[in-house]
Image (tube, rainbow, N blue to C red; front, top):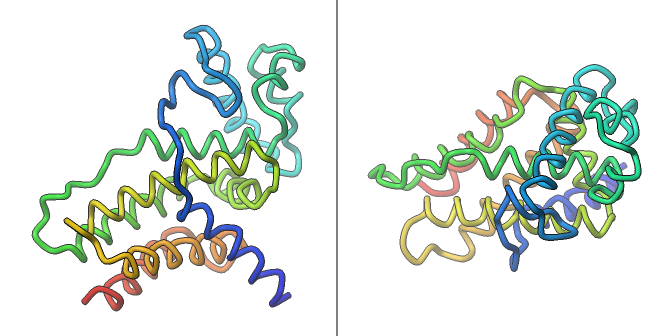
Length: 210
């Protein structure tokens, strides 16, 4: 069990430590540059995925079921999403990319970092089925999931770096990334709610920075 948890932590660490990605969430998928019509199809699929997850959970989610809910042919859905893990990872990426960037003008850097960590941790606080699905999906080794992990990682890194201020200490930045990755694994394995996760992240971040 310990080895499994360690492996999960190493995998999830890549969620917040990856680079070299682009961020046009409306017109670009992990497979292709999208036209507006294609982007609308992807939007319908991701919205339908959230609905199905709320009803059936990750175990009951399939790309075919989501396609039917979205009014899209299964073959079309598979041209955009290679697996249900890929689809769920895309849902989280879009949710994160749409989240507002925290105010970087706060005087205290610890307050700025805490605001970032709490914002990300609470993105799915009211959607337990989605939250559990995201944790499972991001552990996948599907190349499309790996690409999205890189996108997610860069987004979180940029938010934390901005919160730390000019020329952030690389060791502090990496420590915060690992802190978030480990907390995400714990929450995904059922060790507490995301609200408690956010509180724990705040305490740990302040211990690290103050």
